[in-house]
Length: 320
Image (cartoon, rainbow, N blue to C red; front, side, top):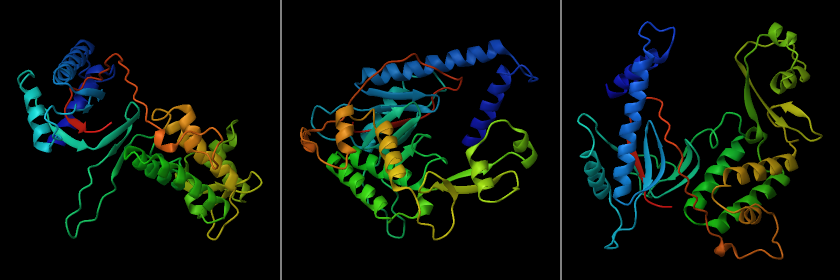
């Protein structure tokens, strides 16, 4: 019921700001936005008063980290719940806050693109153990990314949030070795793209697009709009449709893709020199001990941007 009500309210708010809508009222839409900003700002101020480090805030909630407790005991779920209830008492009548999750550590790459590391708890008997890492945003999960790179990023982020930086480098070197030895399935190196344009529409287009050109180069002349194809980078610089049993992938191309993507996605976690060392296949003469690598902590305050929906839930990562 709550989710249905949220969809209804969001739809009505959208109608207030749409010129074509029957209930268009730009002034009312601006009042909703302004009120939402005021409430979210109040939540942030109350959290800061209690020593919380604010990480990210948007219309869906607030991500923050709690400071070490004076008595040295770790924060428990009940402690966090009590803190949120305390913050809720400072809110205007009718505004309720919820504890939406707690995590051991968090890496914020950019707005709405982050990784959360769960506390390690054994799943009940008969229940499948879930992955320890939760990835949010297209930077970490994208239909245009190869499965190998997606999995590597998830594993590397899990190790990073656990502080196991040497294992990140070992994982990278082992993956490069597997690629060069031809031990990676071509299916894990494919990108999957839809052919959304009709045959006649693409034929008239002036701009060439890779998925269509790969399909045509394979000898096909037609397709159904919406048809999805998978293809990979073969040796010799050619893109080829995936076929069972194919082994002719370009290992150096994918090693370069892996290195570039990982350095980009982890650029907020480590210095440029540390990234070079972590994603290198050999030791350098002047490398620092991997054990001396430390993650970055960069705090930036930016103007609060609200789309019109008041803050509704909070998640509390309890680590860096």
